[in-house]
Image (cartoon, rainbow over all chains, first blue to last red; front, side):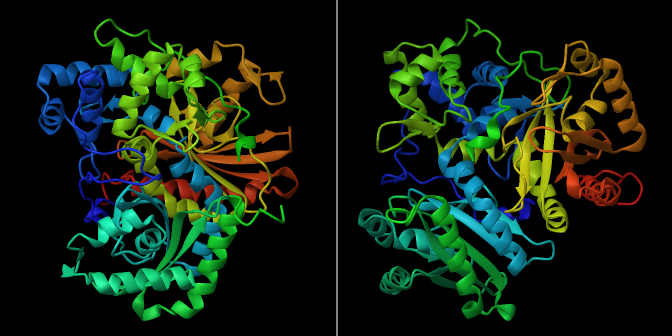
Length: 279
Length: 279
């Protein structure tokens, strides 16, 4: 379960565009340092570190033990944290309950789920649903068959925009500023760790925009093909992307493309896209 | 999508037992009123109110507009809130990201998902996964077929313990104090709005414990049958429940029971139950 989180990375600080209205990693302002400190306790948790004792929590959040205990107690009273019988702190169910109201997380997922299930049933490998958050993608849903090959990403985890199928789709339809910010970086394709040619990536993005489809291949750790397509909202803005990820040996991208396209269109319609005239 | 939230209720204040280590609705302590106020902004959101402007947020949280704006800004800087182009506040993706680390939410869901998918594919109606939170159940996952009948509950929403299949299973295996707290209430079965006999409920709970299965029937708005079973962890403690919900006309509880049981056992095994000797 933890094994598929190898590409987890710390959040970056250059989120831009309307789909990422906030800036991460900003220094606490003078007004309410206590709110920032309390939230920094939550930041100490990650996919590889889902439970921590007081000393670890204090160390990871950079706060004194006494402050950590006091703020953790406040967060526990509300339900943002829970404490296991052994004393370790974990993220609480109440936070999960409130977070399930996030329109770009569960809201989107609720609409998309029946269509994703159909696609998963038809393809019997992995189906991914992702949104862009600044200069990264976030995995909102992953439906995986029992026998499916290993994949690198978990729900709630982050994916690079430049080297995943859903990421490239989201990047292709992102605002020019976001695209340029990404293209200006020295991009490395993980886990192969090979540099990405900016010119080639520009061509890929342009091709995605003209075909409405992305076919992305990865060779490490296992050769796979991802076929991805954009999801649009009522304003015809691309708000998410879906993909089917299959082992390369069994891949027939030409056969998968219509199913991925049709599913993306169905979800877009459910979100209100294409409704200007007809409905 | 919003239509299935009719049974959403405000959190209750009497959470007890190891699976609900915190107390809801407690008055802010003197230490850090600002943390409590900030969190109370998050409490203003609900399934029926996923976006609010500043005035609504201020009204619902009971804080002055200036305080609301200041704290909402802090929460936005961290990513707990986002602001839509029109100015409305919504729950942010960052909160969803952190909350996905909650062991009793997504952690459980991640383990259970492949088994739930198989069950959903076999039954082609609704499959529910729920945990107990104090004196209520919380829906962690719901897989629903396209054509499936309407159900009352959404992921992240709360269900009554006494009048749902998963709820009765969770209640049957709850600590005696929790059971007595529930049985001491004057229980009403919704949406039928008929009183529940305490003696009958006691018998039902006892039957669930002896058979390891619950068959629950509801007649309003549509006649349905829910077949539910408990999920155990490594310590053999019941930590969740699953159910299949089908229209009564097509229900064959005897046929569904083995599938629900087998799925519950498979998820329990994946959580480490029954591993004392064999693995």
